[in-house]
Amino acid sequence: MPKKRTASDTAQAVVPASPWVHVSAREQQRETKRNAVLSAAAQLFNERGFHATSLDDIAARLNVSKPTLYYYVKNKDQILIECVRKGLQMMHEGIEETRRAGGKAIDQLMACMRIYARIVTLDFGMCVIRVSDDEFSPENRKELRRLKSGIDMEFRRLVTAGVAEGSLQPCDPKMAAFVIAGALSWIGRWYQPGGEYSAEEIATQFNAMLLNGVLRRKLEPAVLPAAGPADARKSSKARAQK
Image (cartoon, rainbow, N blue to C red; front, side, top):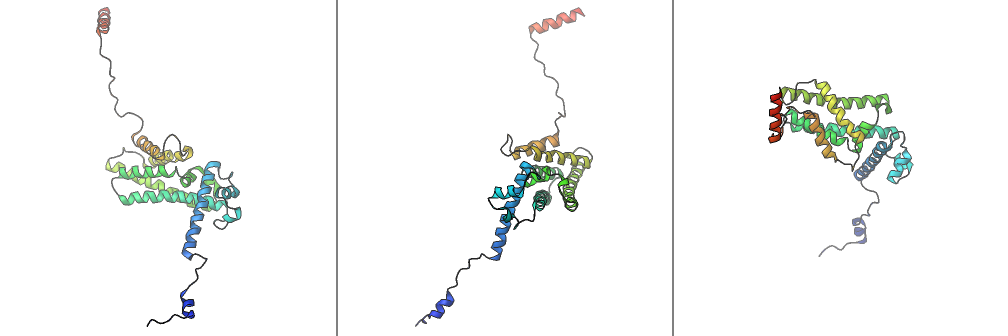
């Protein structure tokens, strides 16, 4: 016969549910909310500028109180450095993924350019472009310049490799990298979501113009209309007068 359960056994078997979530879940929730703070801040920095944006503005965008923000960030300066760092990390990760994929230098360069152009149309990427280095402390400025330098060196490497493989015209890799990054970065200054061109269309057109230029490589001979009878008579008369 099955053993009869006692009241003591039942009490031990029923474990009350904890009103607190697991530590890992709490950390995940905190990180999700922290990212929401950074995203909202990046949008406002891009829309209004860093100095014209207050913590009250960020809190209002998120429908929370200003003190709530201090649970996730120390101050507005920390928010700014985190936003810009996220944008630069996105660029580094995209470029590194392209490097791991391998292939010809020209294909890698085109992929990196497309990634760069795409990221500067996103909130964190725009922060990288729209916020001046002067907004940061000397220590943070040094870190950001190091991250930016890594992207510049990768463009130089790909240009050098492209010249070596014959897919690019001989050029100064340093100057070429400046031209490419400078042109692509400016997208982050004027791009507006929902504008005439999508981010993908902009990246495609910039890639084409930066790599192919706007000058025709070979001028085609002018195509003249066929001479009619009147034109032939005029031509004959002109020759006779000479």
